[in-house]
Amino acid sequence: MFTMDDLLEIAIKMEENGEAVYNNAIKKVKNKDLKSMLDWMAKEEASHAKWFADQKNSLSLQIDEARLKEMVPQALQDMMGDKTLSLNEVNFSTIQNISQLLETFIGFENDTILFYELLEMFIEDGKVLNGLKKIILEEKKTY
Figure 1: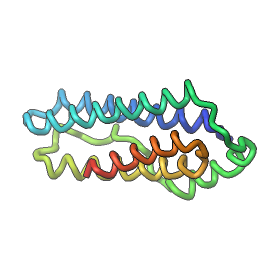
Figure 2 (figure 1 turned 90 degrees about the horizontal axis):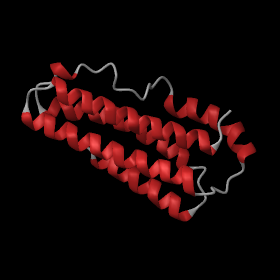
Figure 3 (figure 1 turned 135 degrees about the vertical axis):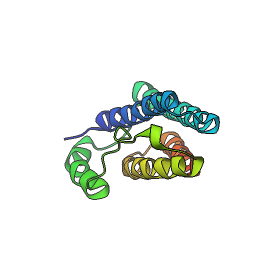
Figure 4 (figure 1 turned 180 degrees about the horizontal axis):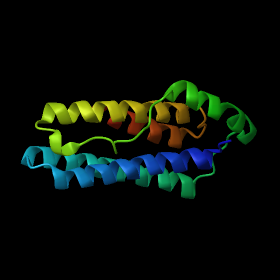
């Protein structure tokens, strides 16, 4: 069963993993434009991870934990299906241009957006909800 704390921790890990993958990919690509784009993506992921960590550490989210524990596992499965939320299987050394890189980002960011939209359903604090919506918009602007 999941609590809001668990969901925020998952979001933090997703963003940290994305940042690490993008930083590792910078070492594998030769194209300067691709390196720049990967660096930008890594910084975006780091910014999002910090925001989720700040929420986890400083806010008391007013939610019904029992309802959350009951609903989230099935809702997460329904929304995410077989998505892995991982870029680890991507071979960045084979990516030759920005278009290919953007296609890779789009798949990962779409999976991330699905998860954040799940979180959105359980957040009642207006400030936190607005922050999450801002991150969802940033994720959508990536492509």
